Image (cartoon, rainbow, N blue to C red):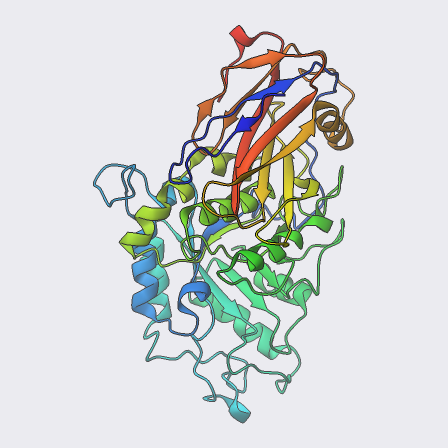
Length: 457
């Protein structure tokens, strides 16, 4: 069959897409939400920024304010700061997360960073006035995120009376004006149900990240948090983001997945902007998009060189729309095959699929092989296999546009370009994607009974 050519030059963002399809029958989809923390928060995957990936423990009030300002700054299509344009906040990124090292280590009882009554002690040299900092973040229309059960100078024993430590942190979170919190797994304070009850007892609701590295995950009836880490910490390497991506697979089951609105599987912060090149940054972002993972940026947003380089990725509205969409599935790994890497090394090429509300399917192809410049590999999927995937995830037998369609059209989500050469072929029955090493393809497929009446986006 005629292959998709979704790569072109690796120096170009735009992609050309070509495919051959055959008519098959499918039912349509029906949205169904699973049980989660039903408090109205995180009904779509959270979007924001957190300090750890870029700054680690070298964080302070000034840096946090600069990040908040950068998130709210308007930018043009080139990613340059401009009076007119669009900001990360406009795109949906709305939370500025302060991670570890806000605390005054060893300033509390028995070498801790809490007072005897459980009140946390802030390092005033780094953060002179937490409330003033969160007020500034709020003045820009953004939310402020905090961090507890710290890893730096971790407190491994509960020497406080009962739950005073938990209660002291929860009280300070509210008093300082924070809107969300990351609960790490380093200290002794691991009771996530208790954390949830303390943080969400008042009228104000706090969005919670469970950062227990996959050690505690939800069930279909119990999820006292809004996003949960499925793995250990990520780093700015392809193999690291690949490992973290794969940790989400077991939460993507058909019909009632464990990753769902209000309770999202989270393979850690993004390393977009910190990887070696544009293609790897884009593939990493696309992988988090197709799995409905929270899009939490981890680069220095105040670095204009980095922002201009990755702006076409993190500001891509088509990608963000797919990440935020919910039609009963967070997206899932569908197919894996061995490719051919340099020398005798071989690695996987994968196809990931996600059903969308408008009866379309997002299709993400990821090549884990590292090739020399210009070399590409192909990955094929039969339309029957695509049919079987949709049938396995649908929740209704209602007849929809996937039944007896005449044409199948696509959009390259990276470039926004529609495919024009749609062909009905009874013999080919496959879609073939061509993708370079450490690169990806992102398509949106949609059936239609008439190409002339098809409306895309």
